[in-house]
Image (tube, rainbow, N blue to C red):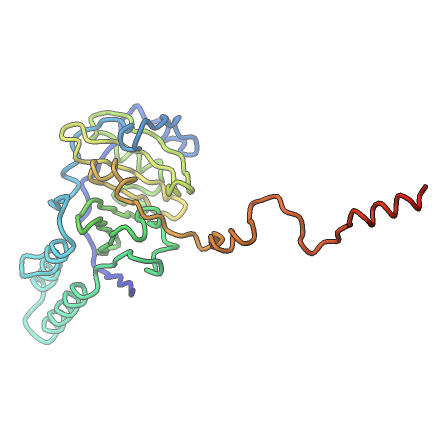
Length: 298
């Protein structure tokens, strides 16, 4: 399936902040606080923070892919149309304005046609990307990417329902999240009611390639928040998900993607892979030959 990346910038999220009690971690991100042992789903063990609903920027959990596409590209009140209005209002009528209007129409048409990527099978083009741990293959999951003004926003769906929004912010001087992972913490203090987040070490085999910090919503328990350390790539990930979907992922992702390095079950049955077997082509000594050799030695 073709992957379309649309260079369409996005409005920055409301900054979500960590507590001052977590400042020691921020000062040295290479030494995260001890991770709590998960009791059941990962989200259940997250510390309780303040309401995080504003981070969704008006998007509702459960929206369909088409609803998200329409919000960005359908009509004069859509997000992308308004982006172009900002440019057009600064221009005088004439050929240059007409050219920008054509550019807008082409972008909106292309976005509506190619924005949605389904993860029905491998080969989507996202397998080696930083978001690979954010989705599974063969479990009715999909993605819409919106890129605007140097920021990327990933909308994730499962069973045609929006359940996760992942914002990728560059770590740059004077940027909204600072220039380093430590600065991202410092800029994030406060809006989770002074509650220290839980530090989680990277565990690639569990689909967590980066260290992160998480919280769950204090009020409605509708949201689960992760701050992802991608400072080695000069980015920070801010991910908010539907709490109930997050805690039920094991059931929703019942299909296990086949590892291309795994041995075919039929081949394994024939060859006895994993068993302690000798080389079938190796030299063998028959009982009679052994007896004859013993007799000669006597």
